[in-house]
Image (cartoon, rainbow, N blue to C red):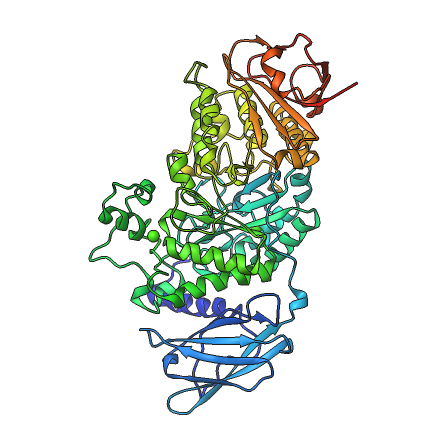
Length: 634
Ligand SMILES: [Ca+2]
Ligand SMILES: [Ca+2]
């Protein structure tokens, strides 16, 4: 179809208005005689279960001049605020627990005296799903890019009115059609793998013309992307996960919005974005944030420069109203969908005072909720400074955890090197030896790969090394997070990053085989999957041991042994990170014996060497051997 420009524009406006009204109540928002409300956020609130006060954002021609009143039991207008743009009115509201659920009417009166009655729904607090449960120590997490995992509902693959149309699975930056229904349909798969929590790349609407699949350019904060299934599918997916006792982590971004965000296209106030005399990118050097020698100009450019031109840099530091709206949106999703945690994107790039305020306000409502930041920094000292309770920081971030890039780097370097006094697995031992800088290293999110890095199988170079690295990250301290497909040995280097975001085999009806089914996996996939699953299940069986501190021994010629123990269950991890077979030195292991006489595999037949042996019995560790033994006696 070839449309001329004005027809295209008209269609865009009409479809835009249709989209805008999706989240609105059925009763008419606008009367011809009074103010016209084109957009309202949030679409509803609750009469309990979350903060009593919230800000209602109203957008429409000249709304800033309106006054608002309400005569409904339990619902009060505390006041209104306006900003530079005349089309916005911000209404501070308060809901009491005796406010009846249902639709309530707000009178919005224009300066000329005409009134529009706005319908606003209050939902019953009893309907709020259980959320904010956090992630227990000893758990295992799993990262999914929703567009690339499973297409549970082909009818939503393309949605009229959105800027990016269609799917093309042969094109790495096009949409592929995966969705939340697809994830909900495979909760059993996650459970079988031993997964206790899923983290999804952002699910909110990304109405961007290109590469909208990755989700990091949000354009509407109260709508899950309809191509992922919309808000209802999100609620259903979280419920399906909770049914299997799997927690859900929402990916949130406070550094930027998408440049097609409706509030960026109609900016309430210039102060809401970091402004520069001319367009300025961030310098992408996270280390300036913790570098005592850094000059302020470079810190400012890092923190206030834009990530890319399509991602305008948010300034909650400039306006407390914007800060309130960001916090409120997160609270809304906890109540709406029942999410259990937040992974905070580009954490150091965001305003740090706001990030601390955000975490503090969320935890005040949901003390168990788990939050971790993406801090792509280059030392344990820098990584530590983002954590609440860090002795290296002078302020409290209220942030419990970060992704452990330091262990990731050490393992990446180690896996390709011959072992020596300084190289190979010694790097991992040395990195873990710096854990004293963290308040609780067991809460760090550990990983071999993610959606931005090379896939682990390609880094490791072969199946044995890949298996070793997965074993190590699953058994050492921290909360391991597997990236979808890593358990199958999916490969690819992130050059460019689209190459590490392939579709999960079998997620689409037209796929030739389904790796969700054990009998359709290749022999190599089967071996790696069984091993990973055995590790995941061992973590579940011995959760307390994995929630406890670890002990490890100095590596010798690549042999690296460590213990996870809660004082009752003792799990001895015997590994050989080298190309040479080696005999176990039981004398070195003596500090970890705990009086045991028998060792039994905690991985069933998926570990290496004998499934059972006596303490002191001759034992050879093959190259890249990995085994976990539960200590016992006769
Ligand atoms: Ca779909
Ligand atoms: Ca920033």
